Amino acid sequence: MSSKKYNNNIFFENITQLRKEKGWSQNRLAIECDVSTSFMTNIKNGAHPSATLLYNLFNIFSDETKILNPIWLFYNEGPQYLFLKKENILKSDPLQNEPDKIVQAVKNIRAMPEEKQDAVIHILNGIFLLNK
Image (cartoon, rainbow, N blue to C red; front, top):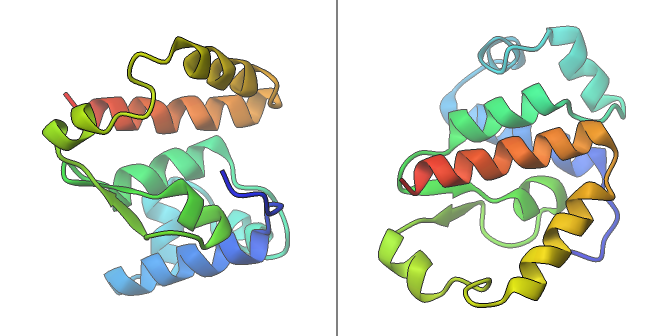
């Protein structure tokens, strides 16, 4: 993961870019993400994204061939999307046969505040659904 600290300006700029790519207004993105437009303004002014917003962003901007890259979304690093092919995921799975990394990842999730744990779990569930 990036060593940079989370910056809400980067996050807001990136979701602005995503909505513009779809030709949507901020109001339309808020409606599609099931949050209020005032919540979107709060994000712009420094509030952290909710689990609902994150979950819906990943559902809206990901499909069976690609998933929105969380590193890009939060830190503007790496590609905007991670392209998925089941055969490539299985061949290049960085956690394959590495239970220590899996255990450490679970510990890292458990160390997060509860509301962030929910967001991470929603994102992971979305990834798993894409790979069925």
